[in-house]
Each structure stands twice: as structure tokens, then as C-alpha cells.
Amino acid sequence: MADEEKTEDSEETPKSSKKLLIIIVAALVVLLGGGGAGAFFLLGSDDDDAVVEEERLPAVYTHIRTKSGRPMFVSTVLSDDERTHYLQAYVVAKSRDPLVAPALEKHMPLIVSRLNTMFSTQEFAKLSTLEGKQNLRSDATKLLQDIMQQRIDIPGVEEVLFTNFVMQ
Image (cartoon, rainbow, N blue to C red; front, side):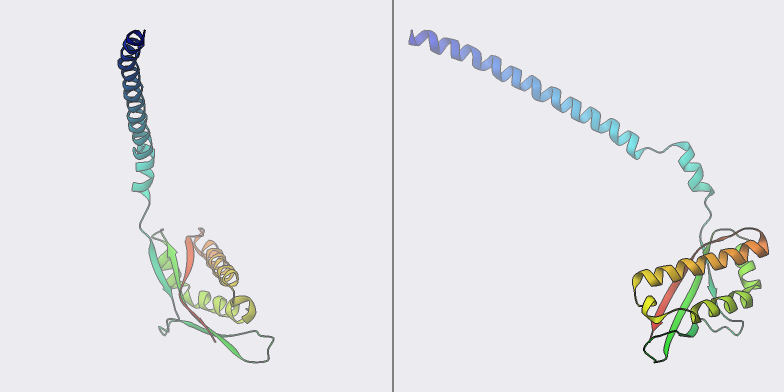
């Protein structure tokens, strides 16, 4: 009887290992096949995407400065602590349209004047926060887009960047 049990166990072991091997191989095939297909779809690009990338023009950065070449804005800012606070900012306009850079240069006195007004009406406490700086940057972007819209009929400016921003 003990011999019969050993024979039955020894016959089931090869069958179990064959089943396990088949399951492992099937799982690998599914994973590798699915992974390959996933990589193809995720890493492959459509022709439409390639066309959009080819059409996108390189960024052009225009330094906003006075006609005398002064590269920064220096302005007093409002404060509740009865002290005089200053803001110094280097401003750059980013665009991709080839018409925008010459238009920015042509209308630089207007741009500088409006940005000076904007900077001098800011509150020191608000500009001390990251949110305040981001709001000022988005307001400056909107201002330049409005000027470009009025002058060349396109907003043109993608964003305004502060390459240096100091408050005292």
C-alpha cells in the first residue's frame, strides 16, 4: 500500500511541474507581448504629432529695456510699514512669431512706460509671496499681449519671464 501511494505521488509531480511550467511560459508570453504592444503605442508617434512639432517655431527672447539700453526696471513699491521699498526686475518676453520681436522693439517706449506703471502700483507684502510674483508675471504677460494685439493684431507674446527679481 505504501508502494502504491509513492507511485501515485511520483506520477503527479511531473504533471504538476509541467502544468506550472506551461502557466509560467504563458504568463511570460502575455507580459512580453503586451509590454511590446504597450511600448509600441506609448513610444511610437503619430504623423500628426510629428507635423505639429515640425511646425512649432523656436522661441525668441526679447529683453525689455529702455531705449538707452538700461536692462532692468527699478521702481518703488507700496508698503504699509512707512518705509520705502524698491523692486528691481529684469524682464524678457518669450514669443515664437517672427513678427513679434521687431514689434516689441518698435513699441518699447510704450511697453516700458506701462510696465513701470504696473510695477510702481504693486504692494510689497503681496510681492513677498510666490503667488504675488506669479500674479505679477501673468499680469505683465497680459499687458504685453494686449499691446501686441493693439499694434500688430496678434497677442504674440507667449509669456513674460523675470530673469532677475530683487526687492528691498
